[in-house]
Image (cartoon, rainbow over the protein chains, first blue to last red):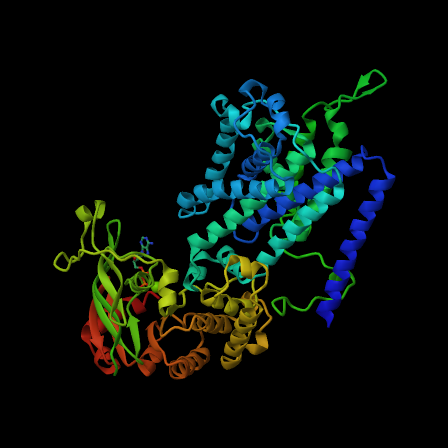
Length: 352
Length: 280
Ligand SMILES: Nc1ncnc2c1ncn2[C@@H]1O[C@H](COP(=O)(O)OP(=O)(O)O)[C@@H](O)[C@H]1O
Ligand SMILES: [Mg+2]
C-alpha cells in the first residue's frame, strides 16, 4: 500500500538521522557549536509545536509559553538535584525542604504535569471568555510566576533568586532528539485524531463548532492544558541542557521568540515549526552572533554592532514576515517525503 | 399530526433596551414542516438562537419532547429594565450551552453560511461524529479507536452518498457553488442525527431553479430522515408550497398563524409584508 511505503520511508529517514547524530557525536568534539544548535533546536521545536497546537490548530492565542517553561524547568530542577548536593545549592535556605531526588525522565514528565495544572487553573475562568483574554491572562501569568518563583519566602522550594544547579542532565544530543521527537509525534497524533478535528472546527468557526455538538470550554481547556504540558516538558529539557537555571531567564522575550518561530514556520504547520526552530537557532546562536559583538576593523568601530542589536534585527525580521509573508515557510501545509518527490498529494481528508 | 416536539412559551429576548422577541408562543408537532416568516429584523433568527442555546432568553421557556431545555426570567439589572410581557414571568433558570442542545437532537443551519472554511466537504461532515465518540483523549490520541474511527468515516461517507454530495467529497467546502454550500450546511446538520431541524433562510440568495430544487430536497429529507422541520424563509413560493403551518413575526411579536391559506389572506400579514417587500 502507498501509505505503508510512506511510513517505511519516514521510519528509515528517522533511523538515518539518529545514526548520523550518533556518528557525529563520536567524531566531532562535544563542545562544538553544532551540538548547541541541535539540542536547542530540538527543545525549541517542541515548544513551538506546542504553541502551534494552540495558535494554529485551535485558534487560541496564548502568550504564556515562557511561564509554563519556567514551571517545567523548576519542577525538573527541584525534583532531581541529588540529596547530597542540596546543602550546596540551597545554601541560603538550609538545604531546602525537598529531600529526595527522582529519576530525570520521571521528573520531566512531572514537569509537564505541573505546567498542565497551572494551565488548568488559569483556563477555568479565562477560557469561558472571548479568546483575546487568554493572551492577556497568560502574559500576566508568565510575568507573575517569574516574580513569584524568585520570592524569598519560597526559597526553601525554589532557591529564591539564586541558581538551581547540580541536577543531572543527559549530554547526548540523541536524548534531546528522541524525547522531543516522541512528544511532537504525540501532538501530531492528537491533531490527527477526532479531538484534533474538533480543535480545527473551533478554530474555523466557534459558533458552528458548538452547533456540531462540540463543547467549547471543554475542548479549549484540553488544547490549552496539553499545549502547556508540552511547554513544561520543553522547559525541563531546557533546564537539563543549560545545567543551571534561574527564573529571571524566562522573560516574555522568550515567548516572542517562540511566537516568531511559529509565525515563520507557518501557523498551522507542525513541520514548519520544526524547520523554523532550527533555522532560528542557527541564526541566533551562530550566524547573527556577530551582531551583538562590538567589532573593530582596524581602529574603526563598525556602527550598530553592539549588545542587543540582534534583538533589533529580529524585530525587523518579524515585521517583514508579518507584513509580507503571512503564510510563513509552510503556510498550513506539511512537509512530507512524497510531496518532495513531486507526487502530488491527493486532496487531504482521505484515509489518515 | 403527532405530539408536540418543540414548544416555545412566553419567550422574550431583550438586548439592552431592544426587545427583539416579545412573548413568543409557538408549537411544532412531530413530522411537520413549520415556517417562521416576517420582515427583516422581526426577531426570527433571535428566536432560533434562543431555542438553540446561543442566547439565554430574558424570560420564557422552551421545551423539547415535553422536557424543559431552556428557561429564564429577568433578574439583576434586567429586572429593572425588562420591557417584555410582565404577566408570564417565570421563576426558574435552565441555561444549556448550544452543544448540549445539539446532542439532545436539535440541529440548525445559519442565515449566513458557517461552514468550516479550511476543511473539505468530507471533513465538514465528519466533525459531527465527534459528539458521539466513545474514545477519550488518550485512546483517540494513541489511535486505539480504529473501530470507531472507521465507523465515523463510513457514516460520513454514507451521508454524503445519500445527499448526492459524494462527487465533491474532497473539495474545499468554500470552493463549492453557493447552492451546494447551503446544501452542505444542511447535510452537516443532518450528520448530528437530529429529530428536529432548524433552517435559517435556507434559500437565501438562491435563484428560482435552485429554490425549486431546495424545496424538493427539504421535503425529501423530512421523509427520509423522519424529521420535524422548523424553518425561517423569505421565498414565499417555497414557504407556501412546503409548510404545514406558518407563524408570522413582526417587531418581535406574533401577528398571525395557521395554514398557508389562512396566513396568506390575513390582512395583518399583508400590511406587515408589503411595507417591507418594497425596500428589499
Ligand atoms: N446580539 C444582539 N445584540 C443586540 N441586538 C441584537 C442581537 N441580535 C439581534 N439583535 C436585534 O434583534 C432584532 C432582531 O434581529 P433578528 O432576529 O436577526 O431578525 P430577523 O432574523 O428576523 O431578520 C434586530 O433589531 C437586531 O438588531
Ligand atoms: Mg435572520
